[in-house]
Length: 166
Image (cartoon, rainbow, N blue to C red; front, top):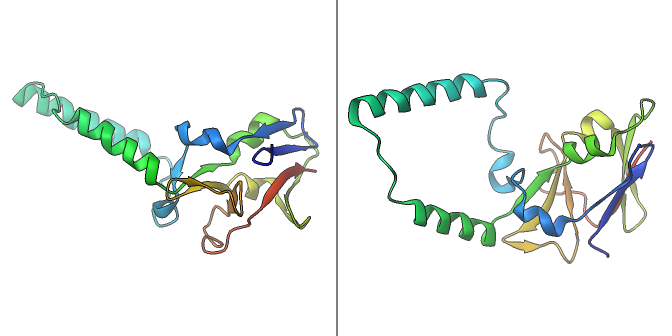
């Protein structure tokens, strides 16, 4: 039970977060590269369209080609999961809890009963680190809290036991 984190307070639904299952979540991000990469805004549709048209042109000119490396790609992904350093965005969990209209503050409670407060809008940018080198954060976890701008990437908030919305 010590690995479960409660998210409650001024919300419609109090929820519990289990970092042990996030390794299987498609929303996870690689913490080693997340803060170094530039955040792309709404260029994704344009880039997708260009990639699809390029692929279409190639198929018309050369014919369809299927990659022979599918097994090696699966092996690489499995290896990455076993040795990677991962986090997950907090925003979907806040949205699922459905903060009340008058809620404005997000509070991180640590095992030392310290509280870190921030506006909910800033909390939606938070990344919860849950794995370092393929291992769960047992000693100072279950999660590390990283601010979305990466300002605390070398010194995240550790030993988190609960999240509250007020």
